[in-house]
Image 1 (cartoon, rainbow, N blue to C red):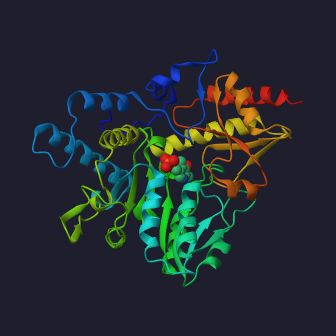
Image 2 (image 1 turned 120 degrees about the vertical axis):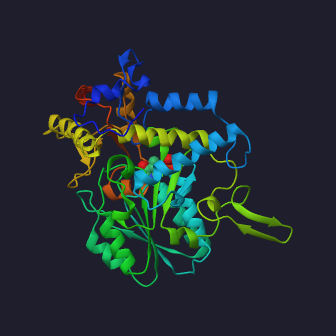
Image 3 (image 1 turned 90 degrees about the vertical axis):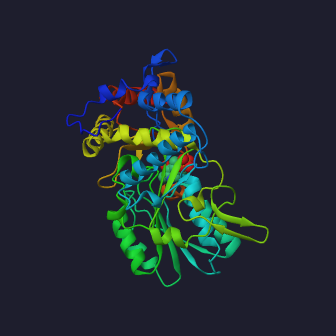
Length: 412
Ligand SMILES: *Cc1c(COP(=O)(O)O)cnc(C)c1O
């Protein structure tokens, strides 16, 4: 496990060796896993930590007066501190456990919804994941909120001038992704936050991709809320986190009711615990939270900038090899984008392309990528996506290009 030392020479082969699943075969070929934007694989450190907890230190948290419960509580709360450090939050009390990114956004939307008046405005962008659209649609349907859309430019960047023009006295919330799960665009989230605050609105940044591939420093960004999901960060499914500024969490009403989130319960009266526990009704995902803490500690041994440079080099290698292929349309070429390569192949359906690539052991995703308004904006009915992680290698990028060309030849 990580000892906090930073490894300066980034070696993807040494990283790869720590992921047991990456040595398996698919359809008689070595697995080339390029579906990381949907979910990432798990390193040995995380797998071992989950087993060790289940075998040696597991019980319910917080209410125990016995040793196992105390040990589990300590590990669980330590994981919260690790997430706080990962996000550069001021304190661990600003980190709320959720079951993923989706639940974190619903938690905020639900609380805000109680004070939404008809005509209040929510600003989102055209590149949002459905997780950061549909919770706001619920407020439109139920509370009469109005959704305003920041346009995406042809290169895949946000139209910041248009964004500034959308803000006004009725804007209550600006909810924008840190990094697009389709285009790879990394948005200017600090500037987005600054402008929103100047208009008196709150800001939620969807960091489900940004936490993995950009720099999720919540104090530098200045947002009120930041959302991440564990399973894209090499941790198990069923765990995510919501960061909130202290005053933003303090002002937010509870989301679900139950045990753990209360202070006192009487027949005609209830009082609530302080954040973060106010938002954590019921037995939390204990193992999953511990797993996320271990995953982030594991990740912290690698230099972020070196990882980002490595991932981008793989992306660029694939793009360079595909240069001049007129049948290929790449979606998203914004300056400084992350290592997500989404494309349409002329004359072929994205699902067919992905299925043919799978025959060569290459795992990519196809469809709308939970971003239907963006597909419409980019003028495609579906697309195929390869997304790189730190354990991918130049051999993976080459296998991807070779399989893509074979898939394309199938249709000509
Ligand atoms: C994956 C993803 C989500 C949703 O996260 P879940 O883990 O499915 O809840 C939201 N936004 C973006 C940008 C994502 O990539």
